[in-house]
Image (cartoon, rainbow, N blue to C red; front, side, top):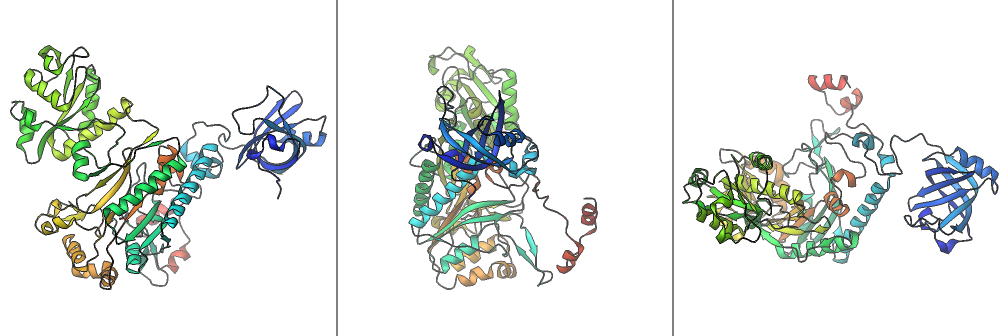
Length: 607
Ligand code: ASP
């Protein structure tokens, strides 16, 4: 080894020892004839002092050094003179007095600072990702990711789970996104698909008698990118036999609360994790991934305003699925016209025609029953009698100084609008504690959603999800009313992952495929292997698949998953470091029996 010790691990205990270190020049300072180097390796920083009167040739070498050069240093560990200690670094009590300095490799000036946290253009960071990963923040994220995955592996191993690898070259699986395809050379005109998830294989592993499977699985989905999406991402994929929802959720809760405590000990974790049905989550928070770090729950005031004579309310209630609901923005009665217009824009973005606002502009402490007409700030004030305002305020739990935000429309629009307002106000009013992890499970998602206007259906989760048994009778006659045995794990307004108890009965699985509009030939072609397996003794089973990238992002307090993926792609699915995707040699296409269409040829030629 070129090194006897690591930079960041030295302490007063090594004082007096001669050590050999190797690493990068983090920073170099010239101080009246002495050269000070901060030297960095994967463990941290240590200060090196090069004194020409003690080591002339070491000084000559050190004089030429620049940031990010790779060097080896021999020197004695000494206690720093009193008053020169640096409490900001772990090795701040000592320094190395160099006797030898050897350049192992010089470096060009990096395109951005490695030794300080500055705002760097993300495409530059991705182009030079190997330099970006040298920065402490990114190095810490890499370490955290390692610890997260190790914790998960140890935890599941301790509970009898078997880690099983499944193939990357697979057949298309119906997770709802577009597949990445890989042409087969040996079978012209045939393609593998990269897995959107190992869903079918993990179910087949249950048929195989594995009972408890997991995998840190890479998944590929060719979707338009959003902030927390990547074309390839990693899931903790797991599946268990002979379980129901409670067993799976209990295990996940134990895993995630332990994981958070072990890897983000400064974050508070709610315990136990609340479990609520999809219907309850939508009713109380307007979202299937509510941020539970704050309240601001939705109140249904339809019955209060039904007779109010206020057109916007009564006309919404007259329509099928129409409802009137609201939330309270505490202390916001004095919002300016502009601020209110801004909130109105948010609900318009969700399809609402408008936002009804009522400011309760009275002195703090005024009881709701004492509110008078002159206290009501609202465009609707003329149409609303004071008794109705009092009843609304009371139902919503509002008081003097608060602002009531009310949306009247179809239930779906009302939920989406109030959820968006809740998120915005939560941020604006800083209601959510950034150091809290509010996990929750949302259960009983609908089994199907409308895929088009002609009665076509698609699975909300995926076609292998079992319906709630009591609802199975509704499958043909009222399919969108059927609840499923699917559940999500959410945290702080983010979906971490989904899972479900599966169908393990061939006949029911056939019925679901048929309801999804697959012809018998299609079913045979795409899922024949599953259905065949389902004739050979299938245990009841269910599983889960939380995203590892999102989990690490949340634990690291990072704003997007690219910060916790070592080599991520851009929003337009490119790898800027390796320049992928790229064109290929004509011969490679010939070997694969492929020919580019004209438009693609032109684009490729212009590259
Ligand atoms: N395969 C599913 C997904 O990727 C998760 C599951 O049902 O276990 O969403």
